[in-house]
Length: 304
Image 1 (cartoon, rainbow, N blue to C red):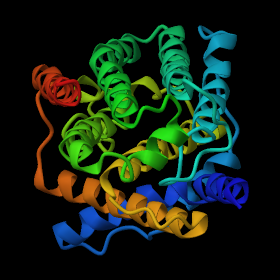
Image 2 (cartoon, rainbow, N blue to C red):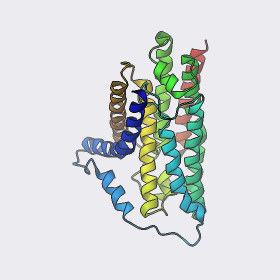
Image 3 (tube, helix red, strand yellow):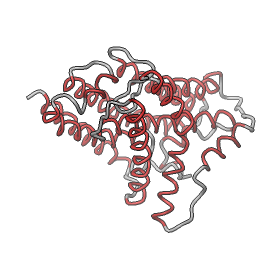
Image 4 (cartoon, helix red, strand yellow):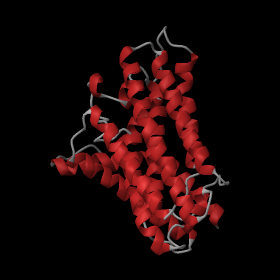
């Protein structure tokens, strides 16, 4: 039954991940008093891009063409590791959260390489910013998962999330919410959301992720956008599994609770983007340092 639930979760992640972008956009439109775009607009955009051909610059090489495909493949592999609540992913083994972090790092690496392969100064600028912020964000992600591993005495994501709200609950409550807060900041950073980046801006001097994909189009851009949706689902699933203190012991019910939490997190991201302005680039590392400090505090609490 658990294996079946893991397969269903993977299938739903592949199908529903673009819906998260639609929920964020509709939430922002609601706060702005606008009708907003259709909830399924991200699906329409992906279909339209898949029907178009890609145009490649004469200055780019095979690295530029391989970037979107390899990046999407790495995110899909990472999705197969992430649990749905207390249900383990399709790929579960000791230390799998380290492998997941490296797979996500590979996605960023090939995206940065593809951006720099164009020879564009703007894309190189965005790539440098992406790497700068990722240095701290990746540390927060790995340290947060390590803290939960110490608290649950497990070394796989499936074991960590299954035992998070069942073992030593009185000790893990403060640690869990500290890590959840840090993961929310990581989610906003890794997915280039406000207050870190504005995915809707067209000003190259203020863009981070979007400026790296300016030269991509057609199918390549569809792969990048779909990969971004899957990445948002991944981090939302990680956050939902930590923040929702509910385990029924029924695989399908736990999965439903987890997916509901993922959709609520998408709404939360929309609310944050509606209530906050984009930070100055110099202030983004400071926010990430706050997340790192919170994670260190959780580590000290669990080891006291």
